[in-house]
Amino acid sequence: HCGSLKAMRGGGFISCRPRVKLKPSLNCTQEEVLTALNECLPTRWSFLDTTEHGLYVRFVNRPPDTFGLGNHLGQYFHNLGIAQLAGIGYNVTNTFNVSGFFMPRGFPPSSPPDCSQASMLKHYCSACNRNRAWEFPHGCPGPWMETDMRGQLLQAIARAQPAYDQRDVVLQFRCSDSWNRPGYGMLPWMYYKMTLSDFQRQSQSSRFTVTIIKDPGVERVEFCQVVLGVLVRFINSTFQCDIEVRAARSLLVDVNTMLHANAFISGVSSLGMFVGAARHRVTYMPVSVQAAHKKAPCIGNVRWFLAWIWVGMQLHGDSQRAIQELPRWFGPQWQKSFVIKSINEVLQTT
Image (cartoon, rainbow, N blue to C red; front, side, top):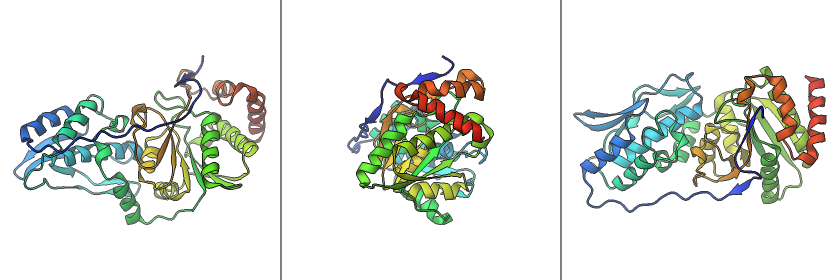
């Protein structure tokens, strides 16, 4: 095959995995904490620092254009979680500012030192050691899950006070930078159909709006334009809804719009997972490497969905060949003719 299909045949919602809860350590020692810390640190951009004021986790935040916000948040919360569980200080060595999205610089060590969470620290550092969490720690359900992600992310948004549009459903359409990359890929119609059906059933709405926020590069990749057009036609043929397709705006406005929607349907995206962690309402999230390495942990109000994920990494960026592959994987075989018809209609208008 020119592309590869990841995950089990079929697909559907799966139960999340509850977080491990261990009793506080009553007779812990700093030696236990240091042993656990040595499994967690250093990572590519963080290390343990001994100062006259105590131990610190130092996080050397990368320049904003190095990664997307999701990857930056993964590193930030991973190191924050290590520091909190160890009862030591946390320091971001330079300002965390990704397109106006600011996070606190850290805090000093607890006084007196608190090692009561040494057992939890040991658990997470064993499960998500520095080899697994070296660069992208959100790919492992680790210390970041013990932080107040929701509170901190909502505070970051509140500080910026960006505008947002209230929507029924916001759908994140990510394609241009991910359709042919290992660990990413494209989601099939089943994912969108079942998540929209679940929202319709839960909300008891006979008609609703769907706002699709497309990534900035979609217009530059013909394959992505076609997939988006086919998706819109499938939604229109299945649901009574109004669809708005809009380009990405500022990062803060888009994140705020995702946060406030009645339902958020994420793509294969670490940012989508953190938005889901911060939301009070339902978030639909595909099981993927980008989201806790397929472990589906219980976070926020996230409903995990196991779906096929198509990755066109063997196509080497060839949009035409990728479009030819689309009828094979996007929808069920009995709808293949509708996929082909939709492709032709989109191509006639692009």
